[in-house]
Image 1 (cartoon, rainbow, N blue to C red):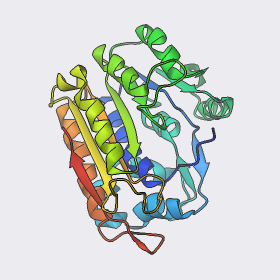
Image 2: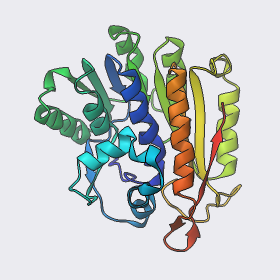
Image 3: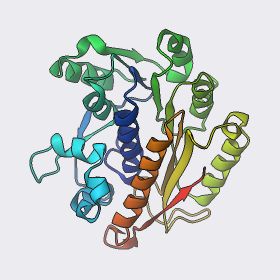
Image 4: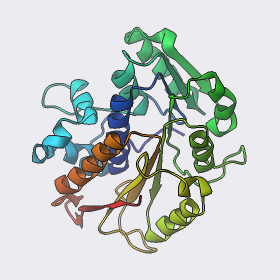
Length: 287
């Protein structure tokens, strides 16, 4: 399925922390379970206007966000003072780690994103560092992971982290297996109602591995719109809430991404969606 959610609010609270983590820990290898391509041309949809375009046009409110790895990278791949392209996680990771990491492994169930990744790696002259696998990562990743060093970072970014895949496993379960082996990792999850969020929290809280996570090296930070409701979806900005769980990350890095979330809330304090709905957001530090 082609990735159509690029540049939306959910991508902001995915790629802001991802880029910061990668830049600070500089892993020897990077693995992406749901690649979805290097870059996307913005269409200026209502969701993109509320997402990356609002962020880009109001970033002067925050020195911290202006200095973020995500923003400086997005700025570097666009014409001066103009926003045309949005880079997905593969592009952001390659640009952040191309000089420091030795290996990149990208999974996707479709061939087109993987072809784009290989072409871009050739442009960057790092083709020898790239491996791509066209399959469901829940079925293959754990088989390949022992080939990589323990500092290999695994980014897990499915559309639905808690839905069972064809392999019989959820991406959340994959995340738990990865961090149980000691690898640094980040999982992104989304939800559109508070009922969905409560169901996610129940799964997370029932996990022994999550309960044993050291709060100094593990965090779960979420943002959601103030307008989110228990059962009803009042409007659709792409996603009404999302969170990240990061594990085996330095405490200083967790402090940095926590600050990014606070700053994002500040920037969106007066935001609207489609010039109608309240677009302000709130942050929750789950742990």
